[in-house]
Amino acid sequence: MTSGLWELVLKGVWTTVQLLLLSALLMTAVAFVVGVARTNRLWIVRFLAGLYTEVFRGTSALVMIFWVFFVLPVAFGWQLVPLWAGTLALGLTYGAYGSEIVRGALKAVDPAQQEGGIALSFTPWQRLRLILLPQAVPEMIPSFCNLLVELLKGTALVSVTGMGDLAFSGNLVRLALQESAHVYTYLLLIYFVIAFVITRLMRGLEKRLKAGIGKDPGSEQSAREVRRAQTTGVGGVA
Image 1 (cartoon, rainbow, N blue to C red):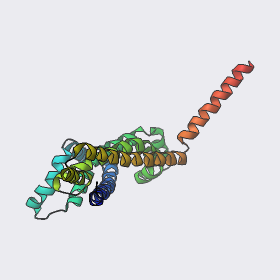
Image 2: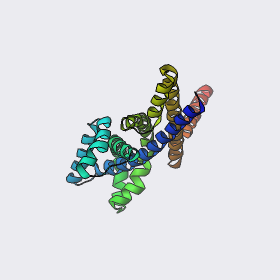
Image 3: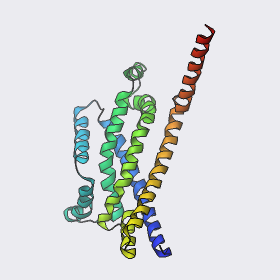
Image 4: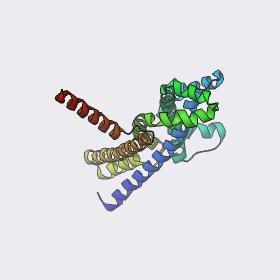
């Protein structure tokens, strides 16, 4: 490819990364707010949070992008630029999936921990911040890693709005070169590299968070090996 076409692809990569970061921030905020709301004592709060989850989880992300980009201007008289329309649609859609991750992780915390907070006269917010989240968040990381990779692949949907993301730029290069195999192979490799970086970063974050609460995967494995060695040694002496 010529330098001009490579520059177009690089601009597409940068646009995709921007969209990914912004959507991920919105997705995470929505996931935690809705996920925590689904564990609330008030039924109306749980109902509204559950309604949001079912609506956005049960609709197509592509149709949601169309709705935000084309229907909102007709309904409310203002037009979002493609970047913000894509961020809003993807963030809200994938946030619904993320809320289930948050809810499940919070529910998985030992109830005795919650009861201990009540015994110490902690407020609900203190129990959430000091007891539940520190234990639940590390368990969310693998699932959120998968969700981020899915979000990365979902960013390609915004190309239907004419946004110059990686998929849109790659298609322009394909039309210019009249070569599909090589261009789409490059696109697959670029998406794979970005997904690989996300996976490594999330694994590092998981290791750091688990180390902070004494659940470092490497430490657990080492402890198991030490116990196994001690058991073997005792058996050999006997």
